[in-house]
Image (cartoon, rainbow over all chains, first blue to last red; front, side, top):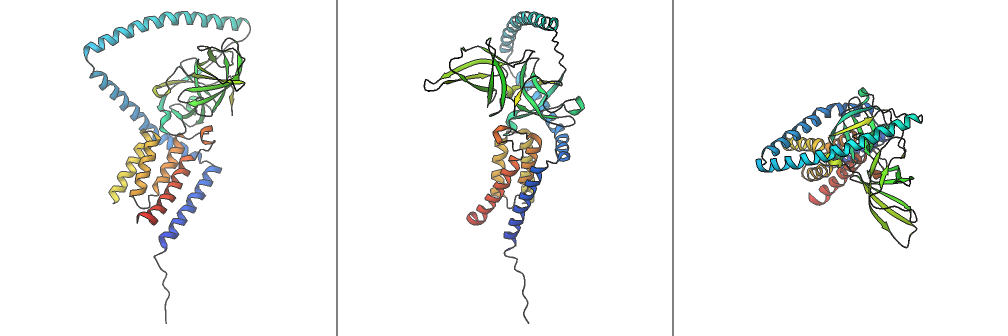
Length: 271
Length: 86
């Protein structure tokens, strides 16, 4: 009488196939229906780590500043004071103009009622290839998908893509391939800007349109939202279009705080 | 070996939380070559996608890019390990 034993030699091969099949099934499941509970759970679990990480980097920066020499600190302090004085003067002028602008718009029956929520940046865009920021406000702070994210009051940098209880994911307008409507300079030409990564944008416009370096790029809306200034122009004689390059005045890798407009519907983001 | 695996998982977790994505990918690649059947790498891919993933044009609006990438890496490197290295 003979017995046929199952060989264990081939088991790893079959196991690998089962694992591959399992991964494919899981992948398809996730693609069809992203598990919201899992995402919320992961984000609430990660928040303490990110907060601790930010705290750690703040302490690190303090230690670095402590190690600087007294002489260099005094020199830096003087330079910064001069810069602050200069900025304050410019800001005074700017604030007067802004108030006047708002008053004029109100007189003409257009009021700007913007509510914003201050948010701490938890992770920088280089954390993943998605080029996204994670901020520490969410549905608990009345944030919703599509809300605009600004630096200060007037520099738009992105929009809310995913929102959780106390955190949200921000997709940057400058992320490669992202498209956003902009208005160029005093001419007011509305066109489409394409993100090129790291705060850079490109615009393709007909060669005949007059644009010069330094022209301001704004959002085509009633309120003042500035994307940046024209930095470079590329004109190819063989083409009827020229490329306008501009950069956000903000370094997105050094961002610590942002504002989220909770009622933002003005910037048109082209999907 | 078990301690080695736990340490690698811890390093990968911290890397996902605090370091740029290319560092995480590098650590994952090394771990896949050094550790036999390092299936956990796919979980780290899921974690990256869950924590940072969004519909971006750069990745063709696909929000599970790292899960898919790490799953492919796992299959390919497991095959290479089996056929070439061992």
